[in-house]
Image (cartoon, rainbow, N blue to C red; front, side, top):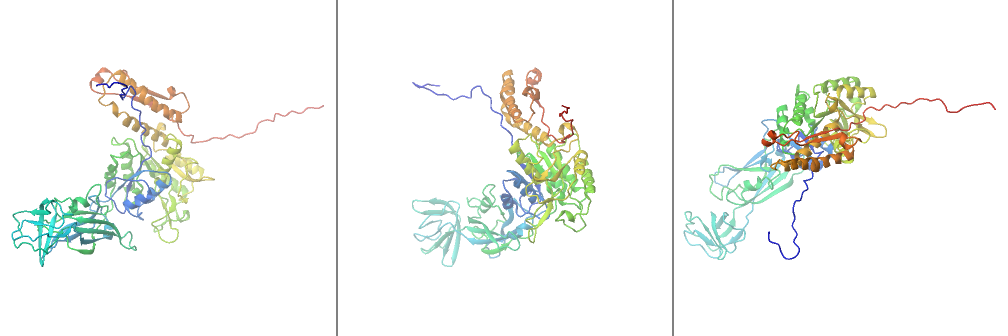
Length: 607
């Protein structure tokens, strides 16, 4: 490099290694029933309002909408949502006819988003208006002679190569596809094999052949239709930048309500435009109830997203289908533990407390199952998922919340608690750290108006110790709280939720933060830099926060990355190995307070 006379400054990377970036810890993932949405495609939402805008109203026959609201109400900030539907679900559609004397379908409009179908009856609340909408309106500057293959126009505004031009000369209409535009003389040309035989008079009106689609939507059956989108200057020619299919189906800027598909295609240019129409309904939208296999498939919509907490509250939406709930939960647990993820934790809930047939409880008194029997029901259900090391936790009972899908004054209902608990996880992580158990008096469940069962201390102890299920309980002065933090793991090393969350966090951070090591020369200098300059500072930061207890740092974590675990034969194969061990702090779950009397220290004597 040539240096200039004077001071020269050169920026280099230096000897420092990249800092290890902390992985996200509380991004939620929810799969289940929504009013609308592209099935199997995860969409990011950051509020309940955004969820409603993208997925429609909260469904009374499911629990996902209530879980989303509970997540954000309790401190969640970011979530991905996947809609799950059954095979055979169809999108509502309408076929628009062309302008030939014998009309034929030319354009199919279906309920959808960004070019993908969006099945279900919601689409039948869509209406379409079709109008002519030319980009250009002008006239001829001079008459065109017989057998014309070009014309001079008063203005070229809105006309470009690929535009279809409509010439109206008296009672005769001609359509031609513009092949060349000459800006200087204001002249356009079309295919010489398609001349306008009689020519064009000087009073000929000239417009381009584009149309407009207005999409109107009725949010609910009693509401008026609202204009939600207006697609202007659409064309039916695939060469045009205004091609209706390309614009409406664009994956980033396309419609959030409909998709477009060209039908037929044999009609001549111009008359293949859809005919002008008003209030065209979309019809035949259906939704088939999903199976556990559909839920399993839907979970893979999260594969490419960094999510850490998984909730599937609609596992409880099929109580009459034998085994469906258990299969869905098993799929969710397996997904969290699978090689695809291994960095996610399932947060679930036990079934609701039993109620008389046909009764939808709105207060704890509406339930008929005794609380003692309900504890046994919950333990039996949870036992299905116990294992040595399980990436999940269960909570009970259900909670009472306001019901936006209900009717009457101040409607309420009982819902599964997992969405609210996932929000508590997020709030606890931000306030106290990922190592803090998301339970206790600070873990108040916001938005909860009551619980389906008030467990006694003995019942809750039985639930936690024998069922590995965490209770949601009333606490004097604190309200309704998450009262325990057990996972479904039987191995004592993996008992606690915060331990699982901490390990997931460390694994994700190491995986993402050490990507720079790939293709670097495998030397002792590299191993030393990774061990001392990257991983150790990261672990020290967690130790200072209290994640590993209060003992000296070297006593609570160990990093092995040297010749002892990277022998020459492994280095020759291109393998780099680092081992990280640490002691995670456990929560104080059982408190023993001893109170007693001691002898007085006073003495008495006679004077």
